[in-house]
Amino acid sequence: MAPRTDARATFGPVVLLGLAASGFAAVAGHREMLSIPEATVTAAGGLAPSVQERSVEFPLAGALALVALAAWGVLLVTRGVTRRVAALLALAASLGIGVVVVVGGFVQDGDAAADLATRLGLNLAAVDVERTVWLWVALGCSLLAVVAAGAAVRLVPGWPEMGSRYDAPTSTSAPGRPDASSATDRTAAEQSNLDLWKSLDEGHDPTDDPTDDPTGGRGPATP
View 1 (tube, helix red, strand yellow):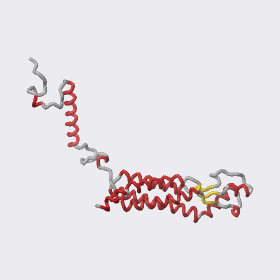
View 2 (cartoon, rainbow, N blue to C red):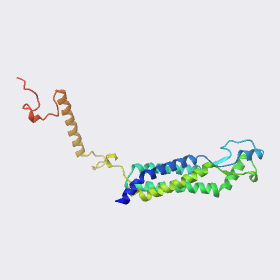
View 3 (cartoon, rainbow, N blue to C red):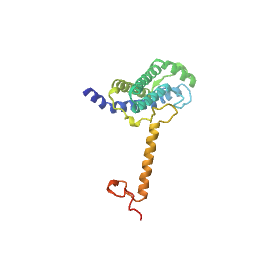
View 4 (cartoon, rainbow, N blue to C red):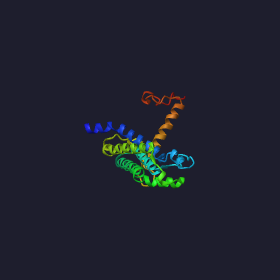
């Protein structure tokens, strides 16, 4: 029982880490990742551009972070196989964030510099592309998200689950046909409620035992 108890204790910290890391990665993914300093542009004879004009974003990283965030949400409200699939999806999306950031920020940064130089009408040799703080935030958050999702894949069988009372009502009858037993139960319950309100309206206490009343709960007989 000790390993299962330990797994339950990790539920809150791991889920919070996964949600926080995915959330910050989603924000960072829609910020500038690579940027040309404004001083470099003006020194090359160009006009001072806006941040958006002299920077490159990685929207795919932000989209993958949103997928990971959604997977964590599914993991919180599901059970069994669906929950494990959500943990695997969170892990895959978190790995994808890291791949996008590494490839775009370190492998293909030369291509980004060429695109920015063309956009701003500058000589490529004079362009000095810098990695912004958002790139490092996205990279760090992707690593944390991978750690959290990997832990979830391993520990999710021992995590607490929502009770079945939160599930949507289901019927064992044929599709399109109401459940006869359920309908009967509902009718009996509705009739019992009507009797209760009728008894109260007549001034009787429904909690009294009718066997104690020789009139059977109907009050004194009318002559």
